[in-house]
Image (cartoon, rainbow, N blue to C red):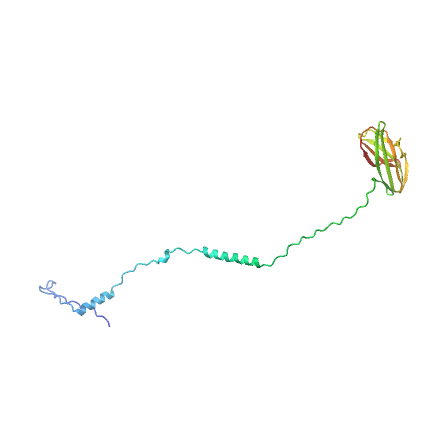
Length: 220
């Protein structure tokens, strides 16, 4: 049902001057017109603006994630403990065997200082005793020949190098002699004498006139 606008109030009669004549009054409006107009006015009135509301949960403190992290850590630790307890025992590492070097037995050392005259003559010699006296040095020599043949001779030199002496017959026995010949497999032992100053001395063995094949030092 469409609402009717309120009736227009009667206009006063216009006089000569445009003002209503004396004693004029507007007619009263009907009750229906008042109600219709009042209802239309209330219905057409705009509602008052509403203020924005603020949710109260905006000011609530945020929930911490620490309990969740602690719970996860506890689960991981429990899993590690269970795995460790149920894990089969690992075999212990066995020591690696160390290779042992085989020791080759060396040949029996020869008795004395070795010497070589040439490709066919060789042997050993040593000074077993020595004695100093007013006249010089006496030594006891042992010579073994393993191959060849040689005629031995000996020479001594003082530490200073100022004196050189060839062997002479010693007063001690057995006497080695001079220019003694030895063959392969033989051994010769005896004393000999050197007229030399009392000091550390080097004694040389020679062959066939060569007196510097090998040397041994004698203490003073």
